[in-house]
View 1 (cartoon, each protein chain N blue to C red):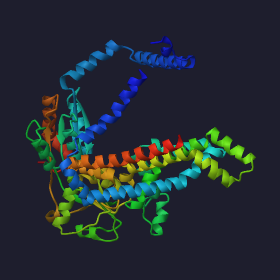
View 2 (spheres, helix red, strand yellow):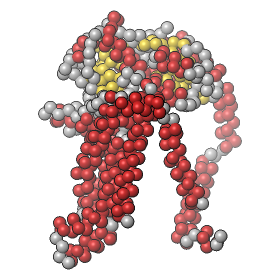
View 3 (cartoon, each protein chain N blue to C red):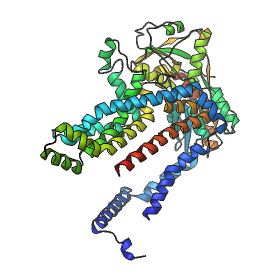
Length: 254
Length: 273
């Protein structure tokens, strides 16, 4: 019974992908790949999702550590706040970002006075992607850091006189490597697929803010056939990364 | 097959029992919600029978006008129900091409309607029911003092336009071409109301939108574009082949073209035919 439902689940997940991949107009793939707009959207997407992942790591990993290891009042509030972007409709996230960092926004107003305008820039794309994708990283890393096995091993090492930095490098990091990698990859993949927050906060302009998901949407309105090609390219890129990286890391862990 | 394989551990059994009783509880409470099923069903089915519900896919610029016309139509025809799906015309057209079910399609341009017609999705000749022009949209009180289309090229302005993939974007481009003005927009929004939103929120200084869009926000104002640089947007409507209620759909189109329907369109700033 469980096997049957599991098989049904695989079918459910695979059929839409097959739908897309079987409809690829192969004769136009080459011209689409050579298309300057497609190339720039793909480049922009890879670049911004990478920067967004770095931003999420720099800010998110310390927060995951604090959530896992430090006791303080209002912790469950902070944790809910950290996960909220994951369940918030992306358009709402984009609107919230606009009302915070826009020209009339809470912080944006001050930034504009010193000559910094964020909406409609590539920076805005990175911010939108990081905002929406960061929870994936925080959740994965926090769970790993809370593992009792890791904590016990750290304590054992401490009792044997290992310094904090030695414990971090020799125990905590190796033991949470797989979760960290999985979190980073998930975060990156979510950033790569970001649409709603980006279009609302950053807008849509070729080479500046038009990422692949937006390019797919625009293409769907003008040339549906090229939307299929663009969508497939995006899927193949993220599937390859998920498949190759996660598989490698999980095997390393086992 | 050994029976033990199908045995479920006691805690698991408890969980399953809990889920089932919860489901039962929900089922029962739903059942008791309908106090008098006989009494409720009769008027409902009587009402639904003559007219039924119409699903109308319409250009986003028609939002307010169509909502009012829908209400007036429902009032005039007791039992009739209309529901709308407002979005960029091209986006609606691709939904219809992909098999979305609807009764009526109202587009903001004839090109989009024509493409649906060529694919055999329309049951009769599209009819133009309204006309619109373009205006420059600015913040209320026009703080940046934008007077002409040429002003849109000013370097100190944040200009957003609709993407040329949607009718409003093509019309805006036409206006700029006619005025021989080259504008570097900060963003090409995916539908015309997103342009209004960016100016309403103060993130952009100006855009080119339909005259009728200006009333959709209280924080914006319009600057007229002279006739020689303006375009005339023509809105066609047609009953779709997928409609399950062609007669009811034609009735709605008839109402739209009637004096009453046209008066509502006029009230919302459309030019009528």
